[in-house]
Amino acid sequence: MLGGNSRSRTHSRHLLGATAGTCASLVVLGLAAAPAASSEIPDFRPDQWALTSIGAQEVWEDTQGQGVTVALPGVSIDEEHPDLRDNVEIDDGFGSNGADDEQGTAAAGLVAAHGHGMDADGGVLGVAPAADVLVLPTEDDLPGAIRHAVDEGVQVVLLPEEIGGDEDLTDAIAAAASGGALVVGPAGGNADENVLEVAGVDEDGALVPDSPDASAIDLAAPGSELRTAGQDLRQVDVSGAPYAAAVAAGAAALLSAEYPQLSPAQVRDALVEGSRPGPDGLPSLQVSEAVAQASGTAEDVPLIDENLVQEEDEGVPVWVWFALAGVVFVIVLLVLVLWVRRSSADPYGVKAEREAEDAELAAARAEQAKAEERPSRRKKGGRRRKTG
Image (cartoon, rainbow, N blue to C red; front, top):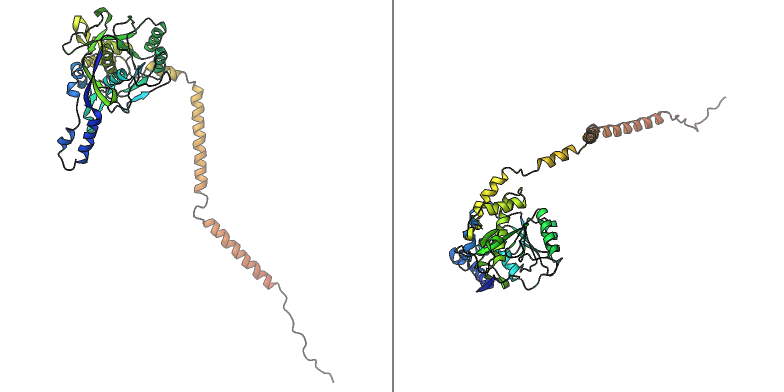
């Protein structure tokens, strides 16, 4: 997948050991000084010359790629790597996530690694540490994976290799560009106007070995001895155009997050025009200047398409608004009637008490009337008086 202009070197420092050191530091945190605890976490960022070279950290106060998703079709990844965990999603609809995950893990780390450890002060960082990564492993359906990624709403698509002569792949890339995604890939294959083709440079600003001619390169970016996430929870140095393209994809995520109203073509123009002179007169990636370029373009592009809003407003007939108003009026009237009836419905039970008292009084009077109507009984059996 990497071609002849790429290589990798795995470092001996293993993150499992770093994690154990971190845990030990946490246990004795109450007894030891805080600097001693943090010193147990290896920090590889001083070796990440690419971030400093392109000025990525200069814009992190405003944008870190939050809300933007970068798709990595055609590769596998170690989603449990501590520098990538929680911001990586794997879609295995086009192939299983396999063990051959060196390129995918390294590329994802260059795009969106977020570090690890206390306050995330260990490990490595990507260009856009707050961006999300959608990985779509596949061996034989790269065009389908690209189309699916665009359907999922990704803003950036990072190709794993140079463009060949596959017509279906060319069509998928064109569909992605028209569907709202910036397609970024390594330079060196067939020219494609819908792909931002990136070549790698070293720390001295020279093109890496086996780079294509300048006419086949749209943008130069760091692509030599790049410290990033590696296999088996390790850190690794990688070189080659695919990794330079990953750096550029991370920069695209920064711009897309800060100016979501810009089209993929406008983001591409900002990256190229907001650059510095590179080898052979090529534009060399410079994030801070690209953000400034994008800012100028965004001034003339509203966040909300007012024409679409107006069309939606005009599309609602007037009678619908009157009908809605009538429904609301009826509901309010019913609520008011119920409230009035309840408020006048003897809330304290006085009426019911008086009715009970009246019924009791009426019963007493009826009983008294019956007693008065009874005839008095005469006494019988007295002695008779004799007559003479």
